[in-house]
Amino acid sequence: MKHRFEEGLERREANYVPLTPIDFIVRAAEVYGDQLAVVHGEIRRNWRETYQRTRRLASALRQAGIERGDTVAALLPNIPPMIEAHFGVPMAGAVLNTLNTRLDVPSLLFMLRHGEAKALIVDTEYGELAHRAALEFPDLRIISVADVLPANADQFIRATDYEAFLQSGDPEFAWTLPADEWDAIALNYTSGTTGDPKGVVYHHRGAYLNALSNILEWDMPKHAVYLWTLPLFHCNGWCFPWTVAARAGVNVCLRKFDAKTVFDLIRSERITHYCGAPIVQSALANAPAEWREGIGHRVSTMVAGAAPAPAVIAKMKEIGFELTHVYGLTETYGPAAVCAKQHAWDQLDDSGRAEMNARQGVRYHLQAAVSVVDPDTLEPVPNDGETIGEIMFRGNICMKGYLKNERATEATFRGGWFHTGDLGVRMPDGYIRIRDRSKDIIISGGENISSIEVEDTLYRHPAVAVAAVVAMPDAKWGEVPCAFVELKEGAQVSVEEIIAHCRLFLAGYKLPKAVRFCELPKTSTGKIQKFELRARIKAETAE
Image 1 (cartoon, rainbow, N blue to C red):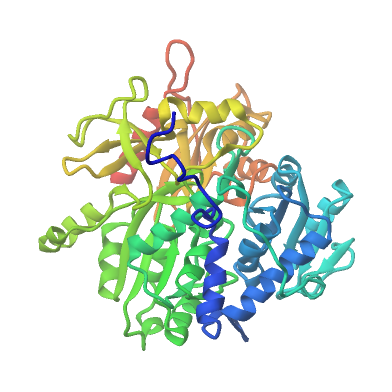
Image 2 (tube, rainbow, N blue to C red):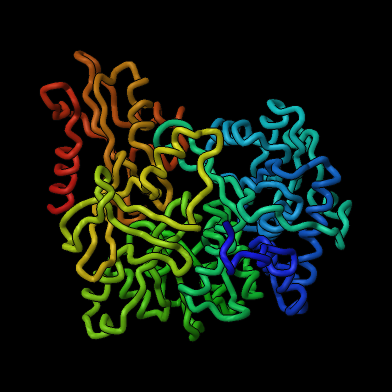
């Protein structure tokens, strides 16, 4: 039975509109149409022009037979068409699947097949995938972007040029809002740390709320100038294509990270914000001082993953870069927790501040909760900085679930929480901190590497009897795989041969960076004791 605050007070067209980040570009074009929106080399477009191009894309996709709920994949660097796809694809009612440009072709083909992509927008740099995809998926619509390299007819069979495709679309296309804010807006694949990659499905509501949370965590002003150092394929650029539109800011595109180019752009375009993994921050902090000459304004930067070394944090402050440490996963739209700074930390020395800033922190504004929980009882661990539990999230900034994988979805949402698989502690002030990672995931340069995948590859070598892979500290990448190999009796093989063997099956960033031949420590049941291997590495590092 309805109570008095429900009777006659139903949801109506006048008082309820589904939340969607597409609306951000509409307002930017309406209110700040003449403001600069996109910079890429000689290209400079305002928000009115950018909105028209996204409507053309949506219109052209619909004319090409793309319907509501269809998947449109994009394999692109950080260039304007990738930003346009974040609006044009969902305007067509479709779901955007941004593909990791660093993956091998078999992995990408798996994603196209699993996601049932109906169209692929692909840069000419990735011609091999376009060619293989055209052969394997005869009905796949291929749209080629010749940003730097001209299209190769042999590699781009059945392809339509992106600019010609846009011209076939209507710049006044009357796109419609999603029927429900729970509708899917994006599909992002995990790095496949436990077998095949899982397809993480985002909804319009979560993308909208995380985009706004980014503004709140950064106190991001109108017309911020954002440099795309973070790959747009990674969690939809942490939702920043939509964030920048909400602030009518400037998207400064960067096809490939280069420290000197970054400083040149910060100077010439007066960049105010950028995001990056620890490796990006280290490269900028350790760059020659002359590259920074002429930069006098404050630059805000977000870093995720393992916290940079205290020396890097101190150096960033010295050069005028204000660093914010965030934490999240693909399943939480990128960052959903932040190490919110406290005024009391200003009284600490550099080492003390770095220690506080290195933590994963507290929930994002528009995320309901983040906690460290006993994975068996689902009770929060005490705030003692010692008791280890699993870091878990709850709220609107959590994925819909895994595509075509109900079992994994149910498991990861068990007990009303999203289970990250990361192990951490709660500090006395309530901030969380990662202590270890479950499933032996190695995070190298912001990319997840499965130790199991590398081990399986090692076992395919005829000389290998037993293999184990653990993380090894690396000054550049944060962590890299280190392989411990026990050879079969009488077998002989070199480190170079082992790595060459792995190169046949693995993407470059997954290759072991060190190989140790030895008898591996095992339990009485034959299980490899990885903690002993980690202890060896730690002892070597300390020497």
